[in-house]
Structures are given as C-alpha cells and as structure tokens.
Amino acid sequence: MSKAIESFFSTKLTPSTLAKVATTKTFTPGRRVAPVDKREDADAQLRVDAGEKIGDKQNFVLQVNSQAKNTALKNFVANSGRGTHAQLAVVAFDTKAADPEAEAKRVVDEMKAQSKSKVG
Image (tube, rainbow, N blue to C red; front, side, top):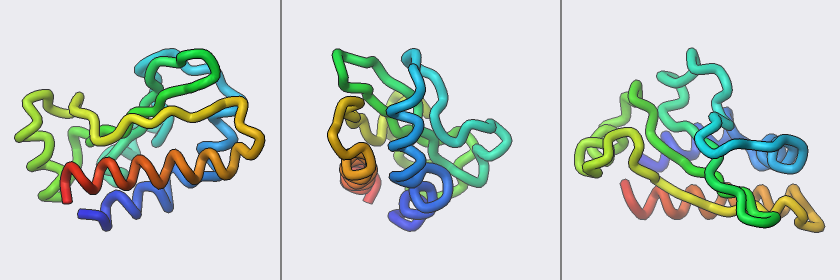
C-alpha cells in the first residue's frame, strides 16, 4: 500500500510543490489542491483538498479518489463508513513558517505516516 502513497507524493504533490501553493494561494475548504486536474484521479488514486484555515495554519486533507485501483485503498474506503470522504490524513501547514520547504516536507511526511497507519 505504501507504494501508492509514495507514488502520489513523488509525482502529484512533492514538498516543493506544496510549499509553493501553500504560501502563495488562498484556499477555501474543500478546494482541490492536488492533483488539480480531475482527469488525473485514476492515476493518482489519492487527492489532497484544502481544509479549514485557522490563523496562519492551513489544513490539508488527504483522501482516496473514487477511481482508486489499489486494493488496500479500496478496502479503506469500503470500511470507513464515509466512502471517499474518509480522511487518510489531516495536517496543518504553517503558512508563516521561516522555511516553507522544510514545513512542506514535515507536512508530507506526516500525511504519509498518518495514511500508512490507517491502511498499512
């Protein structure tokens, strides 16, 4: 399962991409962050949406796309009781961090850890 998560963060939302968008864009809760193009959903299997912003902290939510093919991801969705709205990870990004790249790496690492603990 970790292969799908690692693939997503190495191709669809790298720490440098997250650092750029998190410090230059304003997000409304529920707005798609990555992948931006819905046509990439099947390939990505996962998506990151913006969550609530509290002060200088922008939450990002990792969820499974409905087109996911990975068995572990599909099982997570089926067993969650919330379908594809089930959250694999929710992590706050400090938009005022002195080193946005380091903050983005922390957020990505935390998303990976949370999601792997939920699906294996």
